[in-house]
Length: 396
Image 1 (cartoon, one colour):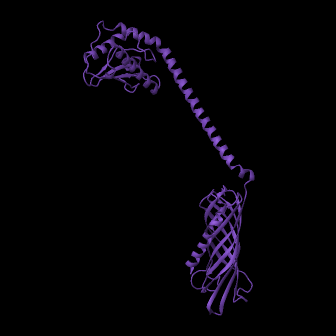
Image 2 (cartoon, rainbow, N blue to C red; image 1 turned 60 degrees about the vertical axis):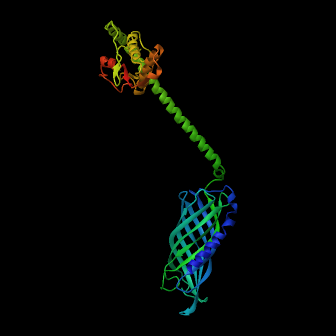
């Protein structure tokens, strides 16, 4: 019997769905958080108790709730229900039973589709119900006094918004009471099922805010874009300042070391052997090309590097099948990124010189290691001078 009744209620409720969905081609949709909703709902009920005949009763509910979040509201549910039941054959002289009930419960609603025009929900709560019980239509079984029972409502439903402030609602559910609302303490606890439709009214948001939702979203997007542009600009400015600081530091270092570098080059050139060094290339060999010097912080070779470059050229000319990797190295002055780029440019300068002299570019590849592969102590001028070098790594 219960299953048949619930199925019938479901068919009735969802049979009304096409009618309720008529206004949903509009853009009405609500964020229920921070808003009050008041509802008036009416419909039928069916009481399941210890008597054997079920009768449809009528009732109505008043609802007041507040949106805690987009998906959850809490509030009060009260109203009036006439619960009816029959008994055949008579039991203790009772053939007809009616309950005049006034329930009141604290209820929570879980909204399954917040911000949408069609919003299904679940609800549950706890409270109490006061009632008067009448039997056989003319005897007040509670002697004119109200009795009290627990009241636990639970159910499902939906609301469809027909404007910014009004929705049509429908729901079904059960209301659990104690076992004595029918006057008998026998069998299972007493419950009654309900099916109701009604209207909800929303309050708490100004008309200007409602009509300006689209403008607000556009404004928020604009503000977010401007904030992102400011953030990018700040990052760009910071990077520019950092780059300038590095460049200034490098310029100061270059200025401070120019005279020392000139003296070092003069001294090295003064001690260079009169006869050029002969370079012989073997597969797997790494040759440090001593005597190749560059302007401080630059990739241009200085006067005095010609002899070593010529020796490297002659070695490649003497071994036409050999391919080499030209590797540039620096000392540890300046940033890693700066020195990587500088060492690569210096290796490219050496390759360009060799190609101009007639060596095939296909035999020459380049790499810049920066200060990652030192061969001496970078804390001394002598060690730094040794670390600033060009190497031939014979590949084939």
